[in-house]
Image: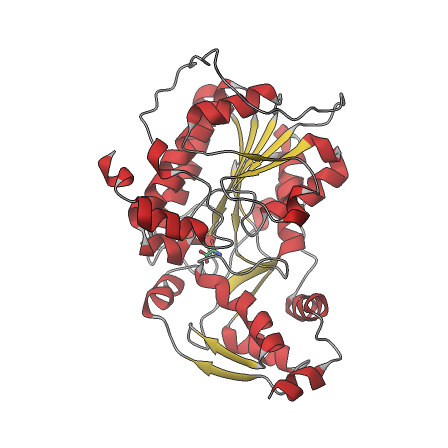
Length: 376
Ligand code: AKB
């Protein structure tokens, strides 16, 4: 694997980015075969003790990305604090470290992963380690290692230990030849990013392991996810998070997509709830293993108009980034999630006005337009 070993400097730069959602050390990629592997007797691991309950015992990989901390909070409320372990290769901030079990785990190190699963009697795994679309194009070998090789480790661990496995997919799993308005669950998928290719691979491999080995694989294709707690992490839909931070900080926003670029989006609370709901759905309600989920679709200009209802002084200019624009132009404009609604009752709570007022409330701006006016 010399291509991966040679990456270390670039890789560590990307891995240091806050919110890249990535979790992998670069030097430890190795060949993988699907068979039980020996755990050596010198395995040293600091385990977390669980209370004895009927709840699942959960591991979240890539826990310091956009969704991990919020998901851990939701799952801990439901299953108990000590039944949910957040993991990453990065050092957690104090608030994360002191809010519940956190451990180092490297998805490219099979033995490390296996020790964690065995020592903590993990039964459910949420696999969030991944490089997103824009950052993946900037470092294809790293994206390939993390998103594809890492996934192979996760699938093997999950199959060997009979875990219920959740892997997020994305609108990015579609491409320019897919129907874009709306995009159904089953159609042509020819993405043009390494991120999209890795996600189609994940969908197909997970489904293959399900039919071949009985793996309880569950997958949702997420739209762009918008949350107040985390900074954007290298995605094409990041503008829809960045606008809130910039509107608050300076009252000025530079958008890297064209004003009429329509993409499916979702507020984080809906996304996390959908994730828990599909994991809890009875097996016989699932007619498929990979579902589209959707809440709303909007363009940058529509988002700006909605934000201006609260912050009329917001100044916006458009400075298109060619890479991101090409990616966005190949993605779904509207997502058909009728199967998720029919099979396991998916229903979103947040539309665009609700999303915008919630984000501004959380970031502290609703009713404080003078703050932006003062900055200006
Ligand atoms: C990205 O923009 O890369 C992600 C996604 C839509 O999967 N937010």
